[in-house]
Image 1 (cartoon, one colour):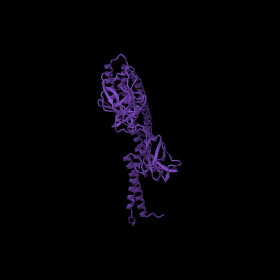
Image 2 (image 1 turned 90 degrees about the vertical axis):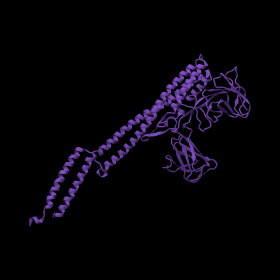
Image 3 (image 1 turned 90 degrees about the horizontal axis):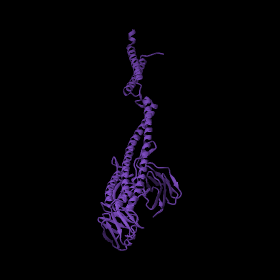
Image 4 (image 1 turned 45 degrees about the vertical axis):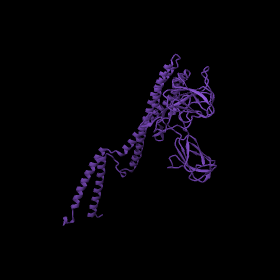
Length: 501
């Protein structure tokens, strides 16, 4: 085989170029301390590094969410601990007030202290984390509670209520009062039909003001406070011989819940308002349902649903009877002012959950807030018209009634309040236990995320990080070879046939 001068030149340049490329690659690796600086350095290693880097990014976000959740839950835990101390003080006051030897003045002094503790509890219930209320359900931008007026009533046809709207089914209370107001009917009659005499006291019964509810009227006026009764309510006169007889109303302080509560899922029709849509089930997130073909509510109905606001949709589903199965429950379509359905008709089921959740690991979310009604109770109106309490262990209602009993010198009511406040404390402590369980769960998730992050970082390091000692040795070797090739090539390229003539 004949070796030409051009072949010698070409081979020398080719090998020097290759050596320069290798030296440049090693120099970059030495500078960055990384074995992979572009995908071509190691395609498989690049894929491993990218996959684990994405996981690390996700885990970093999860840890940020964990930190946020820990902040919310830790604050709630501390707040309920402080609230429990206040409730213990209220229980002690109730035990003192139940002593039959106390004077009216003693009870008024206890009532003043109880009011202060009550307002302190409402402040705790309005605790915020970074400007967001932790006990207001999903409505975290506002306050959970306001201090208003409620009513403790007696009589066959009366029940407790509060607010400035009719309390189902009996009365509403409006205005402001520094002390509980005691109202007694001194005549029998039907509200809205008869003239009915009544009296009220703003000093616990020491002095009374006589008044009359005229026929056709439903509102009692008591020094700046109004009590509006339902038309048709029957009342009976009190008796000096029987203190339990007759209709009595005590206007006293009340904590009114203004946050978000579980009122049940709601449906909004974007296009077809003639069809009635009723949700059944527990919806942790909102669901959008879209009709896929013209039909009627009796079916068959073809539809799709979306749980991300319409970004993605399920496969086409079918219902034979107008009951559509969706995540969380069903949506039942029935005839209203119309029964026809058109392709594209959309119904949105709004979640009934009060939870604010954050994703803390792959596939795991945790609620960071609480619904104040479940923790403290209080008066609440789902529709803005009828207010009611939350049951026998309603802490705020128990304390409000206790203050009313103190300020109207109702010894029997004071004794009942002791049991009710204790039950309310147990309810609150149960909510605190749930918060503690979520904190423990977060700790386990945080530990798991830390381990996964460490494993992913090691995987990236194993394929990306360079061995500097090995790089230095290899770079020195290539540099020596390059110099030798350069020297040899230089000598060879100087040769010419003319040298031999």
